[in-house]
Image (cartoon, rainbow, N blue to C red):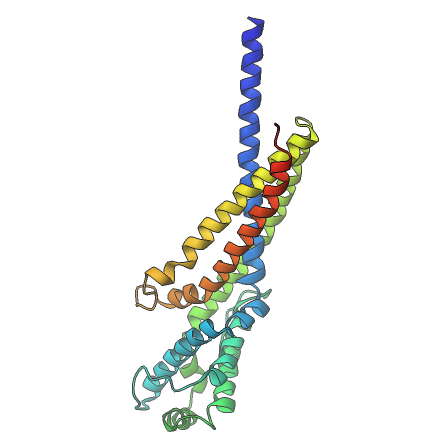
Amino acid sequence: MVEQSRADLRRLSQEQNHEYKRTLAFVIFLIVGLAMITSTFLNPAFMKKQIRTSSNEAVIVRQVNANFDGLSQLIGADHEENSNLLTSKQTNPIADHIIDYTLGFHWFKVSNENLAKEILDDIEDNVGNGTSSEAQTIYNKLKKQKSKTYVIIQAFDLNVVTLGANIAMILLVVNIIIILVTIITLISLINDMRTRLKVKALIHAITGAGMWAGFWLILISGLIAVIPVFFNVETPAFGAFGYLLEISSGVFLEFVIAGAIMYVICAIPWQLSTTN
């Protein structure tokens, strides 16, 4: 009877240890994943650098030119459709203003008129001179419009941008709250495990959880990164989300590298703390 009770206690202790390790791996993955998302996708300074990489610059040029095509149709300026009238020199300032408007800490957006005026200034400063004759024709036609701001709002889908800015702000606040809560949970878990495990076993459990967190970071980020490779994200089915997937592909590849580094760093002490 006593031996059966001891066996039950050992089995219960093993089950609790496995539950601790699973929870610890999930918490570490959540902290690392949300921290990386917050410091990259929700960081305007990072995203402005990201759109200037060779691959992403082409994506931004296509997107802004698509909006410029929509602008020409709204004001009745004839030109060849789907032609890239603007270069990165003209598109980057517009993209920068949209990123500054959308990301970072800000109150809930209810108006996008100031953003429309900034884009209008960018067009006046960069499109007026040194561009193709077709782009200048569109620019000259735009100058004659009475409600330039409204036309820019319509052409660049700024109402959608405003919605995106508010969603990004909510995500930023939620991410920070979840990160703080999970850090407290992580500390609580480690303190509880310290009362049950020796130092060597504790190191083994934490680094093992870190390896699992790194593995899931590699797997999930890698799957997202290859979506633009296997699917045509420029189709209408993806909409504006397709451009975001193209830009984020490179960032998720960096997440894969970070996950691999995390895995290797945790694997060394995990192996050293393995019980022979």
